[in-house]
Length: 425
Image 1 (tube, rainbow, N blue to C red):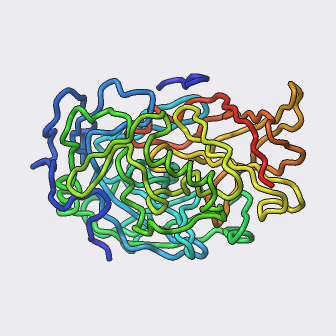
Image 2: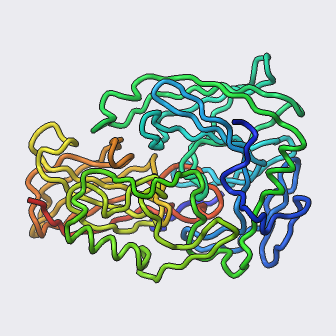
Image 3: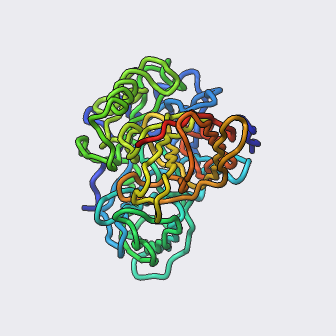
């Protein structure tokens, strides 16, 4: 356990498999590993190499996972996407503490569920809550409360290591709660009621072999632990999708888009490598390859994308009378996201302060909100801000979401970031 610093059709394999099968171990034992530790090895969990002494940042893990994606399930306003893989280590974050959750001899699977809007497919945040009951077909099951998680390959989802009662057919019933965040745009009035959906899956030797044989190692061990991320295999190929109501033809958008494509958030040249058909690195992901829109696609005038603890705070200021406010105020929109893959970061707390000539003219908390155009973000109505004002964004609580490998040493810091206001007309 570590304390966080104050600055610091069923049966189809998918997601993380490669066409070529490059890097897949023969028997689930450690293969191609050198210079790293190991992860798992007990029960159904394979022994996998890990990165020794990873950076305090988002980094490239040693391998792509393999998983079995089940058919989506409709549940009220929601679409549930279940996934199964082998048990593996993840990290839980509670307040200012992070603790590894190790697979045990009793664990048989790692169950994951992504919750989406049934209409738009947009991934929904952690405050939906989730409860899963798993049991043999036709029998009462055991209830579980999966952790809200962020993963490079699956993005934001709910997941946990679970124990089963041997091979056979199992039924899972998922209860999704209401979304507490304020809803705007096409999401206004939606996700107000809980809903339930069910699915079945087979647990067998063939399943275990398929998800272990499908592991694909990052071939260049020098890339293990490098700044970057594995591609998100859970997102579709709608790369031309437009987000929000940004003026995509304006000079601000063009400049930001060009900068995004050429250099990462640290100002370093972007790089890319592959394992079969899977990419990793710091390469720029187009709109359809991120849970959240690129900063340049946010509505209003982009104020910047400052970084706190490797979390990017894409910030925009909207003109008076937008869909985000009830009156004639402007709207300060802050969209925290992971670097590279642009996954949402819920369960955080952010404050803001606007200062002019040394005096505070506005301050307060940024409220969680869910919008049909820009997704999950934090924001507030803002009156009286002028160009040239100093805007301070404060992350007072880091995102309390669990993490898969590659994120466990990042996105943990609290702290401030400053911007100079550019007020749209």
